[in-house]
Length: 82
Image (cartoon, rainbow, N blue to C red; front, side, top):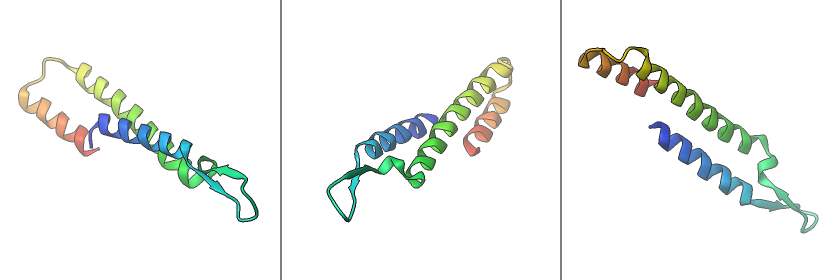
């Protein structure tokens, strides 16, 4: 999955979870679904993965700009696999 897809997917999930509420069985008091760690963790993980992969991509591009095409393809393959 590309960096953009990770960032967009994480953003969509975060906005969706922020809007959702649940009601308690004993009354109509709404509770935020974002208060559950099962909802927070995947969003935080996606956000962190997007940030780290973006930084890694920038580092890889600037590492050595005069690499051969084969080496650039190898770095792109490694980047996509991680």
